Length: 466
Image (cartoon, rainbow, N blue to C red; front, side, top):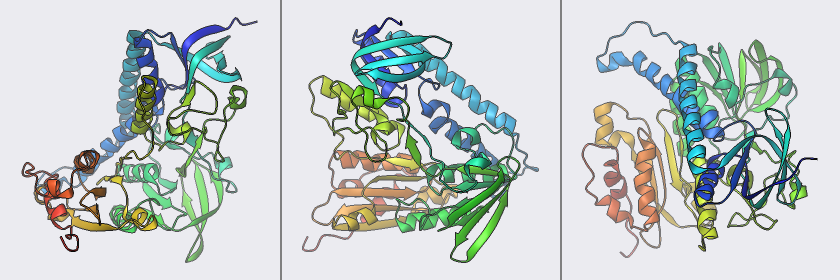
């Protein structure tokens, strides 16, 4: 019989919100334990955000070398050493893990490597990775178990052993022809990176256009850019069946408006949505309810159906970004200190790190229309930004939505170099409830991409009668 161990704070999962909760609680003097199955620090530093951006930047360097002649830089044939690309990424991951372990040591939070499942309210049974079991009880319990890649129920797909982002980022060889199932953000980032490394790439997307949540103009611009680099794109395309083995030879049968066709490739990458990691951990034993999609049911304070149990990040149905999981931590932290914070009405910024990147915050044009929100729309091609003319990075556009009843900024989208940094300027103005005129008339440094905001917001039509 394993003797139960008592903790003030017990956390299952060490992702963005979980690890910040652990370090904060431990530093306040609370006895804190984190149970992590595999990835110290969660998926972001190990298998997702940072590793993908590391390899994407390697692909960007390859691209710069190939187009160097346009800038007066003469080079010979460009070769890619994928083993070196992956080695560079792994070295970064190792440094990040070391930094996380240092934070655990300095905070006093105990990191327990093992698989946990509930056996009673606020009670975890942990099968330790190095053997043995422990039973842990927490006064306060936090779930931060994340999600994993969904494999669509298509005949032959699972049997083909497709890559997910995890395996794709660990390939030390270049696929001859990578077939990407899914035209969302992760799929397109990895599609462009592999194309720039030298692979043939085909993207298959079932929705009417790429990046289904974006406005049609953003989707069309990204599609034009990627197609210009030689990526084959099928949209909308229904995936009918798959044959063969990823890594050897595969055949993918799709149906488009032109009829059925078979795409032959060497590897398949599935990037078609995420599934919460809530199965198999006996949440019912803890009195926790799930929604219809399998996410932990929470209220706007991230409280679950069980007392003194919270869920953070993707498993709670929060938008699937590391920075939102971290904000979930701040909401719970502040509320435990007597605050009244919630997830309601917070701004959700995000970026897709293609080249050029896409950045968005607030309402899109389509969302405003569906919600019946009257908005003025201003748009500026990136070639209208002087910095872009100097660097030659002229693809993309900026778009802003401004309220039709006052001068508040409702949303912003940008496809272009440094899009994420420019978006942060607009996001800050939105958080401060500044009228768009403050950005229109701001004295930004010249020549920067943020300077384009002067021109963008100068295109906003005045309100009738004003």
